[in-house]
Amino acid sequence: MTSTGLFLTFEGIDGSGKSSQARLLADHLRGMGHDVVLTREPGGSAGAEEIRRLVLEGDPDRWSAETEILLFTAARRDHLERTIEPALAAGKVVICDRFADSTRMYQGLSRGDLRGLVDQLHNLMIGREPDLTLLIDMDPQTGLNRAKGRQGTEERFEDFGLDLQLKMRAGFLALADEFSERFRVIDGNRDMDSVASDVTDIVKQALR
Ligand code: TYD
Image (cartoon, rainbow, N blue to C red; front, side):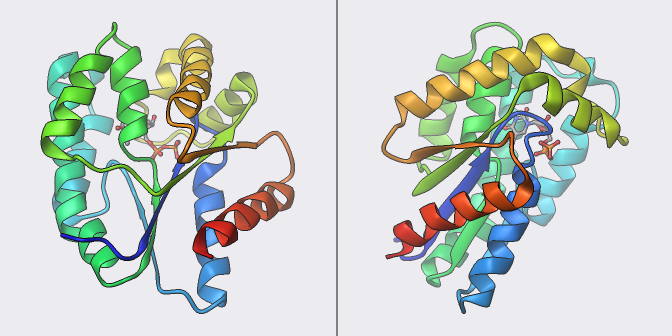
């Protein structure tokens, strides 16, 4: 399917504020008259939301690292087929809270070095990257405190604590270097409005 819309993703460690920024951006672009689909991963389609419950709720140790990669990729494939590609084909702006870069980081780095496997499966089953990725960079301890403050039934990843947050932050910054054409790094250690204003400037440029 050829894409004519714009595919934007937000990435960052837990508690980085990316979900709020994705929402603010969607509101802003809608206000400008754009047709926007705001979605998230894991999830974003009926089937993928079912898989979300499998990976983020219940006993975290019931999936092996490899099975977990398959589940996240299965969810992404369904989300891409049912939600993302149709919206892009219709010329819409798709804003997605997390995408394949999260799997490269969380599944690729947190339980051993599985990045090669994540990339192979991505090439085989997903085969597309966002047009633009906004990395909300955040101090790992601040992010952890925020994430813990709102913890509900989905407690899968925050449970790994500060070590994982530090590793994920460094990993995301390295990923931004690796894919420097599509990544923009935004300092998330500021008030929401300042961060949102940077996000809007970057996205307006991309829309031009
Ligand atoms: P999310 O709902 O974005 O949580 P938050 O808003 O707190 O950042 O993501 C839920 C968790 O899922 C998060 O800890 C990261 C994890 N995750 C992965 O491990 N791999 C993935 O591919 C994705 C998309 C998310």
